[in-house]
Image (cartoon, rainbow over all chains, first blue to last red):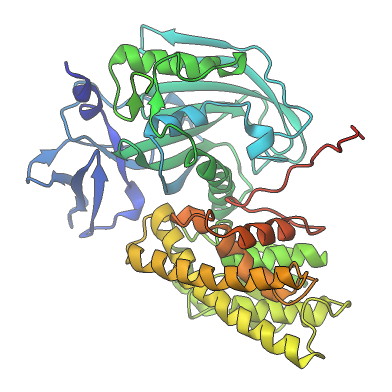
Length: 283
Length: 218
């Protein structure tokens, strides 16, 4: 398998399912290739490439998924998405002039919270990232970070005061990151927040945030805007990261202990041969 | 019933109203409208409030205002007891302020449009939007440079007015649309002066100034 095949043969989000009405179509770009996503009057969604070839379609987690290649695996599972009582929130695509891999990596980072999401996801002087556990789970071929704890002034829309928040991170596919965090109104359960990223090119992407929450009181638009506020605080930082591509050469950037998840993610990408949006050798 | 703002967190125009109310120390109720991805501002419920389908909208009792610059003028008139933000007793200042409020519309139509294109994938002529934005920013830069020679930190004089509030967001957010601030040193200085104002609030894309430690360690 060549490196480009790993990227080509994966699933990517191409549309929000319930915003595509019958008889409507839209054009998006996936890895420099134009795809037309159309929903027939019978409600069935088809994805067609520029040369007319039909592309695979999967519908899950509020999104339409497709590929410019032939995925040899089903779309990853998010078991929590099927639990009763959760609210599903589509936060919409946001375009970022950055490598899709950098966007995923940023989503896995905690240390920036007090500085970028000040008084929401973090606040000075509570800047310490306590040691946590990171592993590449070979049986499922995923990166996991567990036992992550951080002080947060407003952990979620539903949070009324500052609290220590527990986190888990999961990377089930190179362009997808899922986080699990303490659910303020329901201690003992996890809120699920995912970032599904569609590479447009190696240094441009659309990022779709999606949440499955226990929250019976917040207005849907408030939930969407809370998440958009967080993500857009990251966007201007992401667009200024240099180099634009994610360096997989360990000599390129100096990590600290708080970056353990990022180190595992980069190592995992390299091992998989996922180099779309990455820079292999420092230059 | 107090002030109500139909609001969208990523809207630079809605942020003008939020920022000004914060600077005046006003309480208000924010009603979030799902501009993206839901497109709620173009749906019938919202069009009954504002037929133009634009945000923000300010409601104060029986009054509904749908134009951002009008909202700033109204809030200043009604709540600013210092008469600093919109000194209507001064005809020269009033004329100049109104001119900058109109100029703010040009920033929205150019830098704001480029941002919608680059950030939310809206289709429009991006080259024309960026070109128009740079033209407007060059005019703003020239004016702020002259103000600097006069020792004035803000658009009208030494104190901020609603003209500064109206022009601040889409100038500050211009890099979101691929329009960098590198060539505009006077603008960069002015953006920092506004971010230093007591009561300043941030929005996504406009970060607050982090406290600097005093040199003597105090």
